[in-house]
Image 1: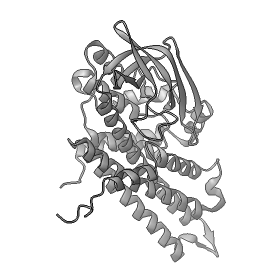
Image 2: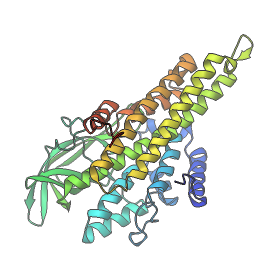
Image 3: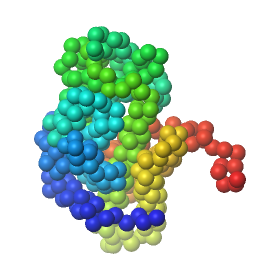
Image 4: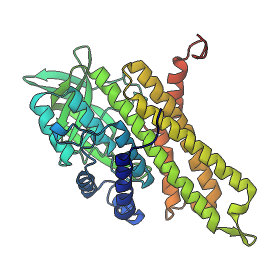
Length: 372
């Protein structure tokens, strides 16, 4: 199998990396955090680069690119600690593109692709603990539309979104609905998360909504699996830059008149960080390639394997970076502490390591798949 990227993919990586380096500096990021953790102008810049419509079909106003291009973009955004959740455009675009119909599909896909609308998935509920079958939000018919009642937590940039994709109980199963911001009965209360990004609590009280699909179980699983893959890609980019930052610090910091990078024990620790990074990178590639797997259970197992390894790698790389930096590694003024916080938050996003280890172990066979 050829794991080399094409020339076009490398050009995409280069374009996003240059934008991050020039347009998303640490100073700008600090300003965005101080202003609330989300800046609409950044979303407009995503749109100018074609990123909001990257995976949306050309006929719907997008670029029609695939999952590998999305992975490349998210790696570079992870490298720059970009706060705005671009993966939500990929998720909402996929859901509306695969399951939406008629005017709902055409209108919102075009707005997502152009960057005019921020549409995010609001699936997390307090009691769910990463379980997709634990949904208490209820939907009931109301003429041609529906009314939703329930509470969603940790909705990415939820109070800044133009609409939310909401899973809810309906007719004995789960369906997906689109709820527009500003609709009666919808209240989103925003707050900063630990890494400086923005999330919200979404309260729905008899809120009008439009049906995306009645086959919500499969659609929601696809959306969450894409979210897991996105966290893996972002984690690879964040670890890559964390390692580079740590190695640069060891080359500059002197003790006994020589750079501490010359100390053998510290060189071994850097080598261990590099090993964990590459383990994570290979499993991220595995996750993105498996997104096209036809079997939902095999797809989920692959994503859980990848997220478990990424969780282990991110925890190791982040903690080693702090240890090798010493006290400066946890100061807010130093960018390294923000990489550590991002890696820590990514480890629990879309299911923490213990959750995904349980998924993998529950699906192990007696032979662990080694023998026939």
